[in-house]
Image (cartoon, rainbow, N blue to C red):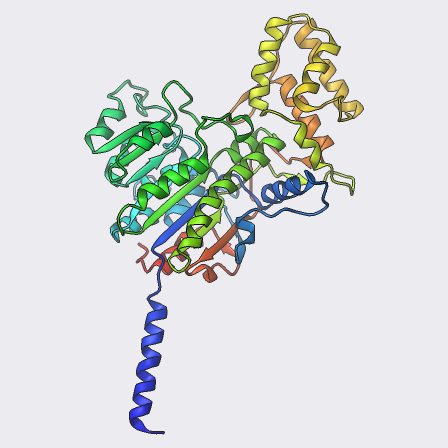
Length: 469
């Protein structure tokens, strides 16, 4: 072979190899369904198909991504992680003990999240969620604190991050520190650091998108979380809108961006064993992923999307005995267990001595029980006993989950509907079930084998060309 031709060929191979090696995503979406195990995804897909009376699944956007795998999620201290350690693993690529935010188990050494790595490379960074901005999972990407309950201190860590966009319902304790002392509000401190505080989409529409922004619920509404998707009305802030706002803001200029999006209330609904509400939260999260996917379709050679979870919650199962699935029954549920509990309290206040038939009619309107759904004798008896306690003996009983205290009648009614809808639960807590991992775009082929949760951000760093600390 001609030596000159051989040299040209070698140079061409080196150029092509170098170009391939240097291909890195300009836009990275890191999307986390909190508490979203494989079965939560499957339940949502079966439910969508059941509405058309189809014995199949209607896939979510992300389950159709070309690369899919699963990961373990144990923490350094426990076989079952919490969102502090789970979020930390996904954000920094290191395990820690439950309850810690982006630090070692002793709460001494701080870890740097991949969001910080993106910022150091000149990318814009956004951290968004459907719960409070200072909650464990989003906090793991911008804060370093020894305890996830240090909400005030976590909020102040926004200032050191210098990230460009934050969004969620608000802040849990903006004026109370970890010592339970009343202190200066974080809001003027955030403003002094250059952040514009926005309350609702109307504020966002008027804002200068070149500013550093913090988007929250409208004033006078809930700072704890966005409403459950099943309870939302027109005008209520939702996760898809937040995702679109983040893309619009971070897309200013030509910097590229890293955006973390958390669907935080899949976890909350699963803690309450509220099947229909959990499914609607998965579908709501899927709407947010759709916004990212729409962006990807415009920039397929520059974008990477990863969809995963910090852990599974509740040990949900689809199928509870019969070979026939009756998931479609869940369409009869009009509101979340949390909202139903409030309605029952209101109903009781107006009808202190309501008859059993009156309560059955009320629950039938909200959940379809007795109207279109037949209850087992056991569930019928349990609800009647709760009725007797509440409306005859006037002793109001409650049922407590991690994020809510519900009226006993509400929790029993939801439990009965779950059973009639082929949905079962192992517990009201997190589980060690595998978490799903889906990927599309630049470098997505790296997500092609069983992983541990710490491998996910390390793989992102590898694809992006960042030196993982």
